[in-house]
Every structure is written in structure tokens, then in C-alpha cells.
Length: 148
Image (cartoon, rainbow, N blue to C red; front, side, top):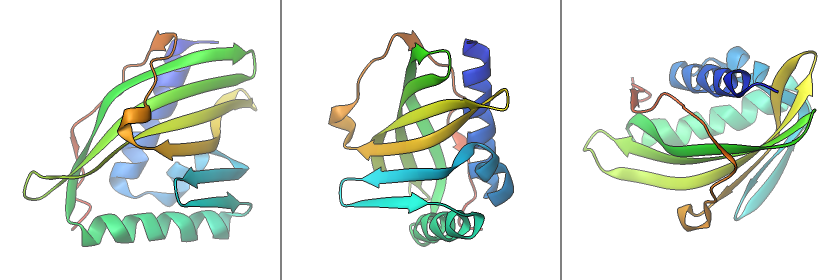
């Protein structure tokens, strides 16, 4: 298990999210996967379902005029050779420099074909954030230009 490999996964994820590059975002996930928010749970079991879910996410961000997002803090714990739990606190900023949303995302990662991939994400209020064993360095404050 390499901290660098986990950091590289999140760097690829942030870059793909920034570019709204659906193929690159999907490469960070293992299908099927699940996404949990306080009000819904989604099972994504195909590339079509994956694209639909992320199109919905980007539509919300576009309408909110999100221009950047920040990883406030991030950490992970090694569960075993094939499983990692990571927690990243996110903040999404609009064009008026106002916080549109902030939250903690708990990522469950599995080793698949020599790569770490996300298979479950649980998003919660920022107050539910936890500090795991090892800090992660994730590029942050990347200008998104999502609204363009």
C-alpha cells in the first residue's frame, strides 16, 4: 500500500472532476459502486448510469455557478491490503466567492487490477468529518470554470 498511489488517485479524480471528463472520472471508480448522501442512496451498475449521475451533479454545479472547489483536509486508513477508507472535506465556491456547499466525503477504496478505485462514497455534513490515520495531500483550490 502506497500513500503516493492513494494521493495519485485523488489527484486524477480532482483533475477529471475539474475538467468534467466523464471517462477519466469513471476510471477512478469500480463498477458497480454506490453513492450515499443524507437523503438518497444510488447504485451505479453501468457506464450509462454513471454518466447520468455525474451529469446531474455537474448540472447542479453549473447552475450554482461553481468556479472552484477546495479539499479542506484529507486522510486515510489502511484497512487491509485491498481496502482503504479515506475522508476528504470539500468546499465548493461560487463566482461570488461564497461557499455553495461544504461536506465530508467518506471514500471506500478497493484495489482492482493494480489500481485503487472508489466503490462507495458517503457524503455527510462537514461536522461529521473524522481524522484517519494518515494525512493525504490533495491539490486544492483548483479553479473549475464549471459554469463555462
